[in-house]
Image (cartoon, rainbow, N blue to C red; front, side, top):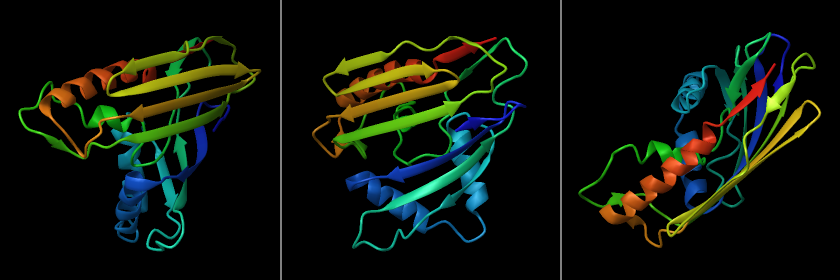
Length: 206
C-alpha cells in the first residue's frame, strides 16, 4: 500500500487460501454478477469500517484442479489526514472473505442459545506494507500483541523502517468441530474482542 500526498491510500493485495476458506472464496467470487464487482468491493471495505472503492481479479474460481489465488486493488480516499498531527488504524483494504477481521463480524451477539455453524480449525496470516509520505513523522506505532486462549491464538508485530510500516498478523483457531456450542461461542467472542483491540490500534503522526 502507498499513501499519496493528499492522504489517499492505494493498495494491491494477493490472496491465497486453502481448505474451508478457499472453498468459501471460490463460491462467493464465482457468484458475483458481471458488472457488480465494484459494488461488492465497496461492501467488503465497508464491512471493516473502510470507505473507498476497488475491484477484484477473481482468477479462475471454478478451476478446482489447481490452488486458488486472486488479487484485489483498492483506493481509500483521505485515510490519512494531512497535514498532521493525526492518527489512523492500519488499513486492510480488500482481503480474503475469511480474513482475521471476520471473527468480529460473526461474534457480535453477546451470547447464543444454540450451536453456531461455520466453526473450524483455521490458520490465517496477513502481511501489510504501508508507505507513508515523506512529509509526516510517525511518533507511535502499536505495540506487538499476543493473545492465547483455549480456543485459539493471535499474534501481531509492527515495525517502522524509515517511512515504511510493516505489519504481520497471525491467528489460529482450534475449535475442533464444525459447529460451536453456546459455551464455545462465548470463548470465541472473548477471543474476538481481544483481537479487535489490536485491529483498532492506531498509528500516531505529526
